[in-house]
Image 1 (cartoon, rainbow, N blue to C red):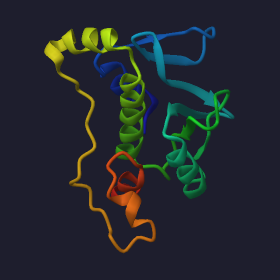
Image 2: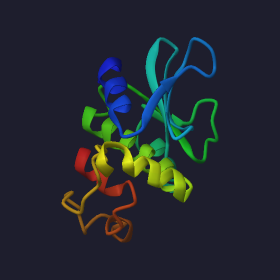
Image 3: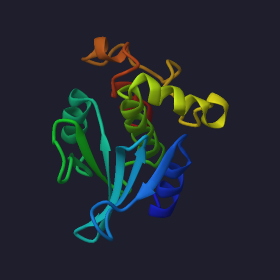
Image 4: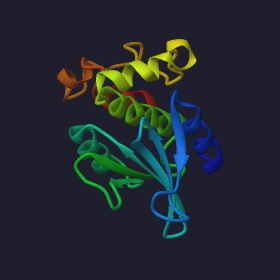
Length: 158
C-alpha cells in the first residue's frame, strides 16, 4: 500500500484529523483528540501504528513478519504494520478502520454525540460484517464466530 493512499483513507474517517504532536514526524491521526494511528518511517520502511484488541495483536504479530508490537507505544494495545507486500491493502485498511472504531467506542458519550452530528451521523469507516468467509474447521472456531476478533479479518485476507 502506498503511504499517500493510507494517509488519505485515515484522514477521510469521520472526525479524523492530522497533527504532528511529536515534531516533524510522525504524522498522527486523531479523532476527538484521541490518537488512533500514526504513520512514520522506520528503518527506511513506511509503517503505521494502530490500536488493537490485545489478543488480536498477539495473533497478528505471531502470524506476520510485517506486524510487530506497537513502536514507542503500549505493546499490548498497539501494533506497528510495515507497508509491505505481505499485508494486503484491504487488510491494512481493515486494521486502520478497527483502530478508529476502538478509539471511538471508548469516547465519552458527549464526544460520541458530537461525532455523530458530523456528516449527519454517517460513519465512513467500513464496518466488519459476518459476511467474511469464516472457516468453522479452523482450530479456534469460537473466536471466528465473534465479529469483534481479528480472526475473520485474517481468514478473509489470507
